[in-house]
Length: 65
Image (cartoon, rainbow, N blue to C red; front, side):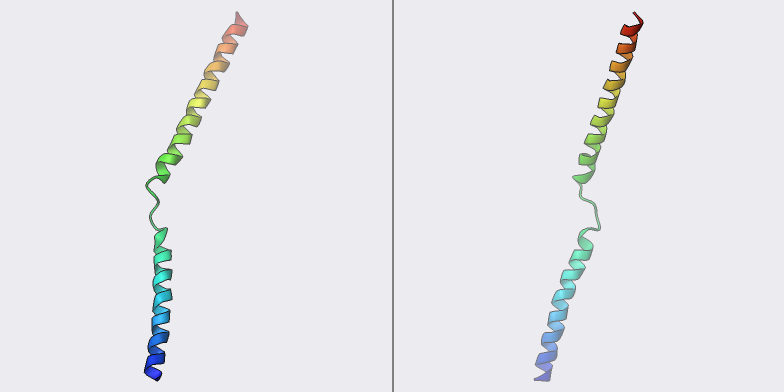
């Protein structure tokens, strides 16, 4: 009876340990889709800033005339 009980206890700990190990290793590598998603807003923000600078330069030129 004690062997059965100890086997059940060991099995319960093993099940929880496997779940904990899987959870701890799940976030080790970054997702492949995360980098392109981050790069797109940065690129579009740079383009927007460039367009704003061009518009300001055009307004300054028009004001000089």
